[in-house]
Length: 184
Image (cartoon, rainbow, N blue to C red; front, side, top):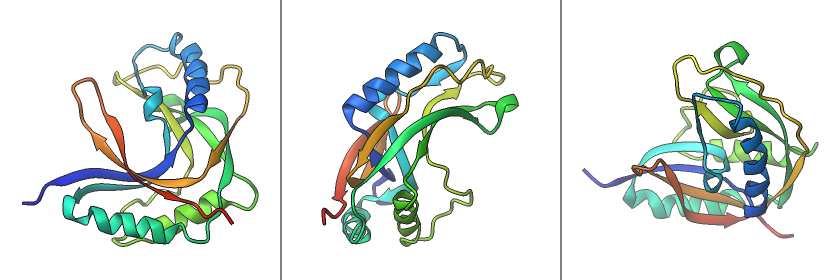
């Protein structure tokens, strides 16, 4: 059997934005027990989960990403608001919402990514968010998940192919390819 890599497609966040979000998350983290917090260097917006992909398909994915971004210009997103999945009574994921411009450039690009073969197995509607923490205990309390929050702008200029690396200290993400969005 060929070696495989656990891959996903997404959008990287600038380091200064990750630091700002980590500061906001730190305020909430102190009030919540029973949660595993995402490390700031892993902050990203997922566009599509690919799963275990044979290593020999990596070049094909790089080419597909370069092709899918054609005609998509850079855009800005806004990190705005907090929430939990699936709901407040059964909170399992604490997240920050992502708001896009009226022209919906993120949605259009994510639709193009979803159309890449093989067909995506995801059946839920795309809800852009940044995962901050996952419930560790079976009954982790939701706590107060809406501290004071200022909106943070985020320039998006590339679609990124990531590899998930499982490490004893937790998962880390490695950038395998950046497909720059058109500049004009």
